[in-house]
Amino acid sequence: MKEQSIQRKHMNVYVFGSEAPDIKTMPDYDQHEGRVIHRDPVTVERPAAKPKADIFSIVLILFTFAAVMVVGIIYLNLNFQSTYLSKSVVKLQSEVVELQKSNAATEEQLEDGVNLKAIYKKATKELGMKPIRQSQIVTYQRRTSNEIRQYGEIPVN
Image (cartoon, rainbow, N blue to C red; front, side):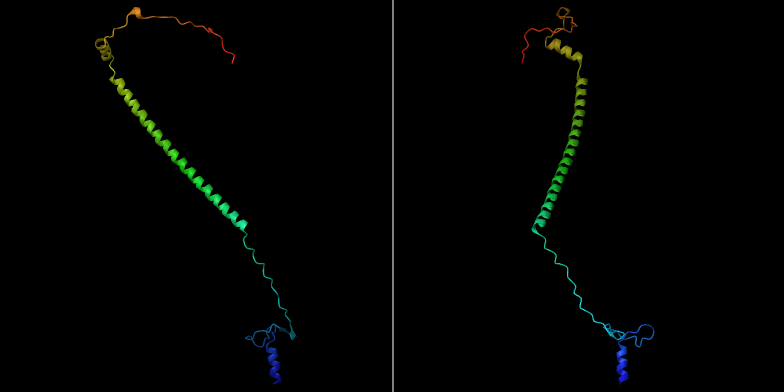
């Protein structure tokens, strides 16, 4: 019986090397080579609880978010207006080109429709106009001078 108790004592002892009595037994970590190892309980400090978010930071984040949203909406509105105006400019330019073509075509039709002989005949026969005579023509000579004539006083103010 003594032998069994000694054997049981040794069964719980971890033996290094190849002379381990039983592989299936778990070692007793509180004893090592006959010595009793005392383990003190280890206290683990928990990290301090995270402080709750203060109201100032929440308001600052909300204000920043609102400012970014307002600036984004303003940017999109300006971008839309810019696109709309550029499309309007292109549309108006195309209308101007069309009107210029129409005016050129109308002017060409008017020039083609003008018959100087018909105008002369209508003016002389229907309206009673007479051709100009040489005595009605007055000619004058232009002076090439750099002087200026002054006919009155120039105000000081």
